[in-house]
Length: 96
Image (cartoon, rainbow, N blue to C red; front, side):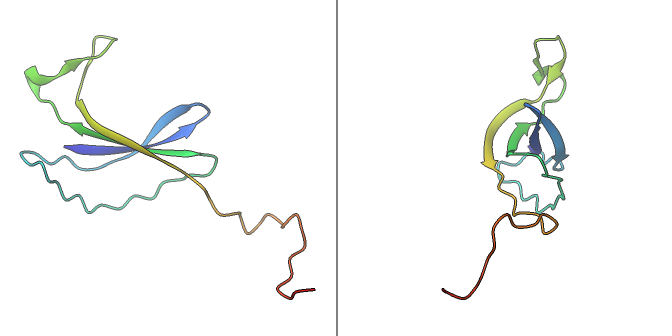
């Protein structure tokens, strides 16, 4: 098993990171950290695959073989405002 992390970019998802492969377990403990540039992205997608070896490989539409997708999920990305961008409205901590 392994997972990939993808972010959306102009309507397509781009692979940004991949965990190491765990074999012969249904409970992998990756404990890995990745630093991913999210600026301009709205969605982070997580895909988990079963690594297929030799005859287990599944055929893709283009004739190549691929590993088997076991699960997927996605998270909407909400980045905090950049400190370099001025606030469009005045802010005061005191009530008036």
